Image (cartoon, rainbow, N blue to C red; front, side):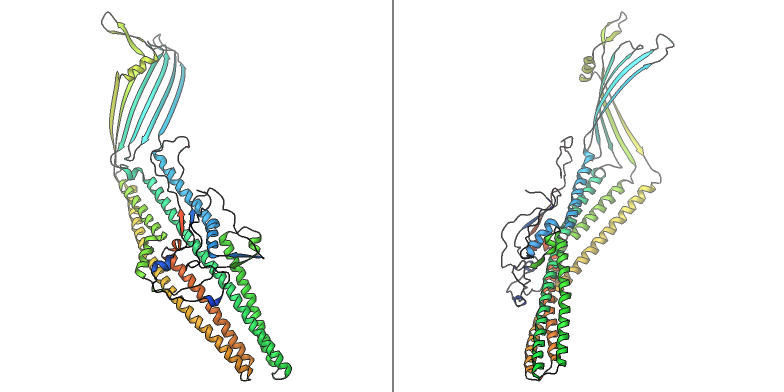
Length: 573
């Protein structure tokens, strides 16, 4: 599988008849229509079948891929599908969020380090010469010592230790020289009250895992936000271009009226003053075209920024949207079902639930920290030296003589000399103010997080209700705007006939033309407002990913407590 700033997989070709991603080569207001559906469910409105599956990765191995766009005849033809795909590949906000996600995964691996097997090696050497007060006091001593040990923490909070020690010493005071001493030590310690148990031991690991999951939800939220921004920016560009088209059509009507007035003035059937009115109308329409062209340019730049297009021809060429915002009559939305869907799937809710879980972890941990410390420790050792019995004295006592290093090892292996110790240590902070205050703060933080979760859920419920209401309102506004534009066209045709028969004036024609332009502009705005409202509802119910058939490839953070691949050879998240 390819790795990079984003990964995508085309599963099937774009379909032509799907309501979410309708393709077209031009934008025609006559194609804006409503199709009454016999059966329409909430899932179809919110997350209809997408045209192609996109897979978005959260890793940051490679830079963003090249842009598969071409400039033809000074323009870029861009569909909504292509805009979404480019944004998910290259958007800088997602690039930043990928780094944050990778850092959170590494944070889990870092926290797992508390279970790393500890090893230590201690080498010592000494050579000491002292003045002797008698012949029994050594004047010179030499020693070499090597100690090697392992230690391992386990989830209960206990620590196991294993140590091996070898000492070689020479001294004038020793009867055996050189003297070899060896020892094998087993140690065990376990907190019995404070810091006892998995929660106390793994608190930082649990918090790191919680943070990793939170970063995953934040990445999902950022992807959804990017989809919404790109979709809205695309439709805003469509609206800007359509408004420019309306302004140009209005200019054509104004020029036609002016030409008719000029002819009538020349033949003497119209006063020259009428030319002033029609010329003013032309100037007004030209001003509107200039303003519309500015809006088109700004809309193109906003879309280019979201797509993170490289500098050069792609920033100099105009963008021609090819996806037509055809709309269909929405059904009444099942508000309760939409709210349930949002509360189950919105990243904001999942992230806030993780905040509550983190507060619970801290509350339980600091409650444990109020307990006294009671620690149990035990040690068991095997000892040996190269001193061995070489004979028996006349009085029956053994005669000890020097042996070899292997004799010291044999004594350890044969357990000739053993020893053990056990200890209980109790510590009681009498006031314990710090621990009690920390526990109270953690409990208050938990209650605050629970209230914040309820507040987030309430806000999402409100957002879903408002988004559903806006979809219904926008759909009705399309019908009203369409009817208004239709009647304004009929009114203009009628007024033209009155004008030809000398029953009207240029002023009335200009006024009705302006009304028609405003009606057409409202129709464009209503259609784009509907598309924006549908996108907002998809975002509010967490169905925008499904609507575009986008899946997030998010590798899980490492979870193996016991990883014995040493020296950096472990699995990376």
